[in-house]
Image (tube, rainbow over all chains, first blue to last red; front, side):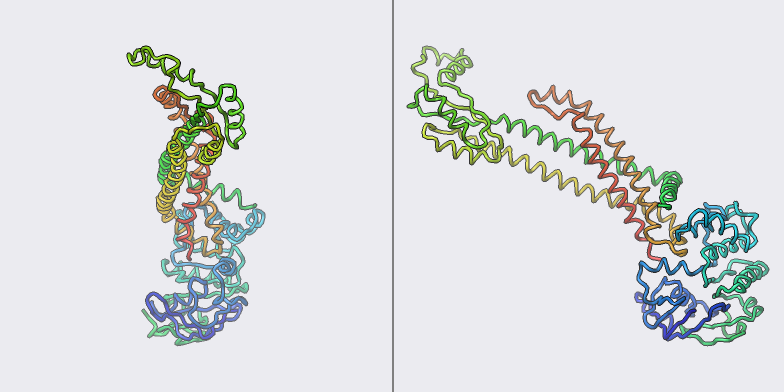
Length: 231
Length: 293
C-alpha cells in the first residue's frame, strides 16, 4: 500500500540531501515504527508521504496514488485518504472536541447527517464520548492527543501517520495512546509512527525502520530501538 | 451549496473575534473610499460644468455687409442645414449697436454717435451639438458665401474639450493608483489577522481542505467589510456633499453642480464595486501566502 522506489530528496534552497535512494515497502494493515536521530531524514520521509514536499527523484506510491506526480490541486484530495497525528496535537482551540472532529469531516465535504452519525462514533473509539463538548484546553495532553486520533479517524483513512505522537506526553499516557493506535491497527488501518520513544518501540515489538544520514540503515520485522540510534 | 451556511458563519464569527483587524480594515476602506469618492465628485462635477459651458458655447458668425436684411433668414436656414449646428440666433447690427450703447451709455465718446455710423455687422450666434466637432462645423459654415468671418474663439472651445478629457483621464489614473495602494494596505492588515489563524489554516490543509475551501470564508469576510465600508463612506460623502452643494451654488452663480440625489446612486454603486473588490481581493491575496502547506 506504500512504496518508495529509489526516492531521493534534496532541498533546493539549502542544497541539503535529506534522503538518498530510499526503497521501502509497507503492506496494508502493518504497524511500523520509524526511528532515527533528529536530522536523520525521518521528517522528510513523513513530509514526502503527506505530499508536503516533493521527491527530487524516484517514485512514491501510496494507496495506488503516485504521490510524486501529484499536482498541487490534487493534494487535498489525496490527503483525505490519510489520517495525521502530530506531537503538538494541532487542535482548533476555539472549537469543542466534537466540533474538531466534525470540522475534519466538513472540510472534505461530508453532510450534516454523516457528521452527526460518525463524529460521536469516532470519539467513542478513543473513549471521549463524555467530553465531546469540552474545549481542548479543558483536557489533559493525553486526552487532546486522543481527540487528534479521533479526528484522524473521522474520514476513515486506511493509513494513519503519527509524527512523534507521544513526544509531549508522560510514559503512562504515551502507553495509552499507543494502545489506541494499536487498537485502530487491529481493525485493518495501516499505521506509521515516527518516534524517539525507545521504551515504546522496545515494548511493542513491531516492524522498525531506522533512518540515518538519509538512508534506511535497518528494517526489522519485530525490532527494538538499537543503542546507536539513541539520541 | 451545503457549505454556504458554513462559510457565512465562519466569516461572521471571524469578523467578531478579530475586532481590531476588522475595524482597521474598515477604516482603511472608508478613508480610501472617501478620498476616491471625493475625486469622483469633483471630476463628475467638472465634466458636468464643462458640459454646461460647452452647450452654451457660442460662435459668432459675421455676415457680409452686402447681404440685405431680407436675405438674413435664408442665410440662417443655410447655417442650420450644416450638420451638428444646434441653433443660430440672429443679432442684427442695430440690435448690437443698441446693446452696445446701453452698456456704455455714460461714455462721452458715444455722444453724437448715430445709427448711420454703426460699426457693427449682422451676426448669428451659433451653438453646436458637439463641441469636439466645432472645427469642422465652422469650416463648413465658412463656405457659405454670405459669411464674412467667424470669431476666432475655436481655441477657447478646444481648451474646454481638452480640459474635460484631461479631467476624466487624471481621475481614472488617480483612482487606479489609490485602488492599488489601498489593496496593498488592506492585504497587509488582513495578513496580520490571518497570521494569527495560520494554525487553523494549517490544520485545514492537513485534513485535506482545498485552497478554495480555506480561502472562501476569508474572502467573504473581506467582501463584507468592503461592503460596510462602501455604504458607510457613501453616506458620509453624500451628507458632506449635501452640506456643500448650496454653498457652492451661492459662490459660483450660474454654474450648477449635479444635484446630491442625482449622484448618490452612482457614488454608492462605484463605491460598492470598489469596496467589495478591494476587500475580497485583499483577503484573497493575504491568504494565498499561507496555503502552501
